[in-house]
Image (cartoon, rainbow, N blue to C red; front, side, top):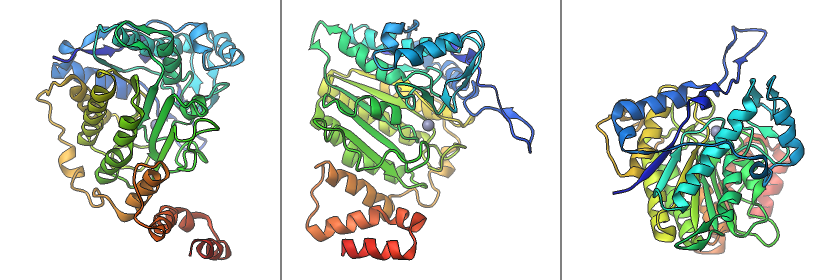
Length: 402
Ligand code: ZN
């Protein structure tokens, strides 16, 4: 029987992001609000799955832990705004006591990692808030104050695992629909940390997350970006998992896997343009758990990131937690029957080309001959061609490829 830990705390719901305001339409609640997370928690309760999970009580991450990644100046600036709230950087509004909740969010991941490494549980899902993967060392970005997963990697490395020795090699898989720029930055020059991000190409943030960002000097190959075209669904994502994510994990052989579990690639999400259903998230979690079983005795910790569909996030999150706990509830995803049949759910050629280009770049797939590589590159860049270039630039690029 799998022992799955679960981190949740009422105080995660007290992080106040305020309202979205415009001069033109009525103010409405911020995208990053409590509804999706509370409704996921409530579905765990209603389904009965919550009764089978092992509660892990979060604690507040300390300044020392937070500054293993963030600068002291940035940490202190958030601390000083704890009484009033404010803005943590770019698109990161927070209310009074926002610092306290952000520390509790990061600390939830640390508590789960500690429980996994001490063999109190096998794996864990942390339904934390605020999310973390966009936060860079000296500022918050995209609703994220502190980078929970980056802090988690440093923490894991500080622990001694009695059975397996020190944790050194950590793999992070980030399937949030937005690029995990902050986490990429944190470990770009670290050959012992493999970062894999699947995301919608150039959604948020702009200008990061390309296939060519493969890792810094001494760490080339440890950063894998799979920038999927908008409209990617079940076929594209599963092909990316089968061709890149899982083979890369098996090759890297981590001591621990952390997952940035963003559920905003779903067909109902308002902040992206992908088409995933809950069964796809079940597929991701099942295959990640199996990869963890092969490489590190099943040690895997999921950290909740984005996901903005009030209706659908609960079903996606439930599928993930069912998969890692090996318990299937009787809950039926009544939305999926239709969306799974939508056109273009199957792998499309331009999506396959991006994924193949990534696989070839990282030595996970052999291109049969040089002309095939050209074709892959050309196809992978087709959407860029269509988007930005004028005719002379297009001609020049085609000349260089042919
Ligand atoms: Zn996201």
